[in-house]
Image (cartoon, rainbow, N blue to C red):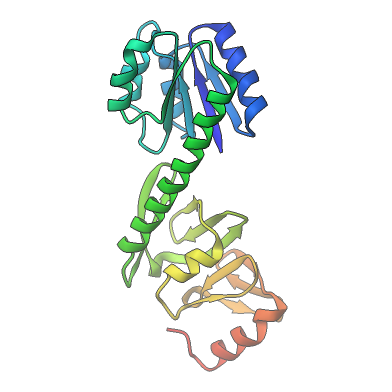
Length: 238
């Protein structure tokens, strides 16, 4: 998991970096002296956790929290206790008073890790429920895309991510290859290696080791070769 820190006090930012490194293995994506700079960063990145001060110039932490995606979990860090009730109305994960206690911070991070798991499962469940016979619903670049199976050329697996190549674009989403294969309700798709699923409708040609789809060369794994050649030669796809 990762995080960002927003605080207008340089010393507070440095102390928070030090404490986070002591009690967790969170990746710190960046630190920001004000909410405006953080908002610019959030246009392209969605951190798991945001450590957020409240009393800051221009846009305070409470105002900032209202504009943040629900996928980012907020932990307020402030010297003032009077904002606690308001912070929980904004669904903050926790509210830490400065000077921040190390054990208290660790507890807050553990809570955020737990809620992040619940959030991921909820999103995953909603995506599964939205998929129907002809479409795949995925999240990529902080947006949801509904992709027709007939548009997909092939899918490449990269650890916990997959790259979906379509006739018009390439999308990267946080999902493993096995999971996405289970979502595709179509006989046209076949696993051809540990890292690739292809749409047989777009196969131009193949040999013992490679499948050719448009300008792409897809390596074919030995364990998958017999099944692919057998099905393809018998016209069992689609």
